Length: 401
Image (tube, rainbow, N blue to C red; front, top):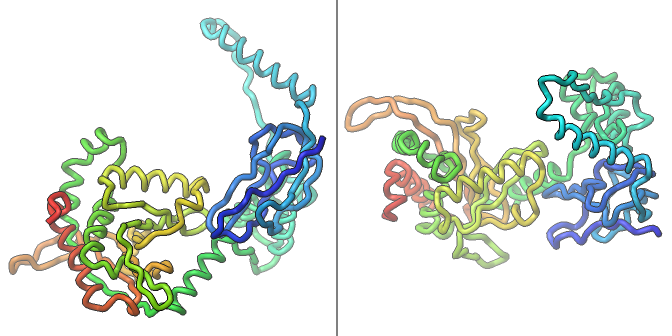
């Protein structure tokens, strides 16, 4: 009996999705819950698991096509694993049991046979996915090692080949934008065209924060099982500054100003697919350890593409740290419908004047880009001054003064 494989219902904020490379081919046996194909939305990549165990009988929609929620994409014929595959599984199980039994005889046993994997298939376009074929034709790349199922060449394989210096037959390279990259482009252009953006700057002496980190980082990590970074200080300081200047935490909705009485701060994170901004919820209720642990979790999810739509939806304010890439100064772009974004930069030892004397201090430039339609210059400048004061005297973050 054939069973339908359908796209799950997508969230209201996501209109459709693109089918990336299929992980299985027609005729392959699949286990229930095994990922069949990735679905790329303008926010995240989702997995489409097999609803039942059986043989993949038909692929209705090929890689690269756009689908909506509940779209039929494949059929699976319910059934048990083929005999050959079952025997292979049993043999592997028996081998594992035998290995366990002989563990104590390792010093007398013959050298174990080394299991080897066959090299990735490089036979060319005949086993490439439709999306990979299209990209190979456009770029002129022919020698691509396939890492997909049964040596199938995926679009990512082509991108990897190009990234590692494969010489295309033509001088140009044309690569389709991912849905995420297109969405980023749309939102940034929207922000520039619909907002009155302005940026103000200040600088922060990071020595007090660095001294606290140096003194307590080992104890902090031992107690909370997470590193003490700079971001938790900035999140807590920004939260306090947002309390003092609520317009920076507000948004424009038509002819109204919506003041948020909560603090959901987006943290810009670099991922292989582009910049993503997962949200820290209710930062006024989070401890330093909570913030650091959540950011570490988001960073891992961004790298492996497992961030959910819910984790990147919403947010009343954002922080981006160009300093990790060496940026000295920049003007970040507001993420609509938010009204402001804070930019952190690299820390550089510079000569500054303190109490009439020239001293060397680790200084960081910070930038606040804001929508001038809702935030006045006085508020934006005062916001950064308040942030600066909190970070140059971190005890204020603990004493709430």
